[in-house]
Image 1 (cartoon, rainbow, N blue to C red):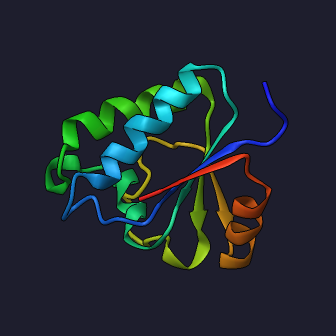
Image 2: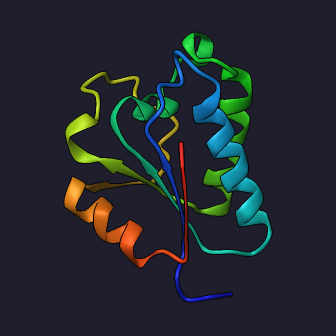
Length: 117
């Protein structure tokens, strides 16, 4: 495994498009290939961690893939200013790392590859 991770940067709104889930799906595939992957949720993409997935495009799949990442111990790096105040957000207790936009830029610069959706 290389030292530099692959960064999956997701900024698409999963309530409006399947692209957010597609990015998550691709990232899980990269993790399965024994690669170090850093998932970053920016802007409305933080809704990938909403407890109620009924309002998400591909909501059932989002819940399954999210559970797989949790089981593998893969945290989500979440843009700090976009974390919802809703108590149901991240109800599954997925590990998150709050990051600033500057820290996101640092993660991208340090990455071996970047996939952005």
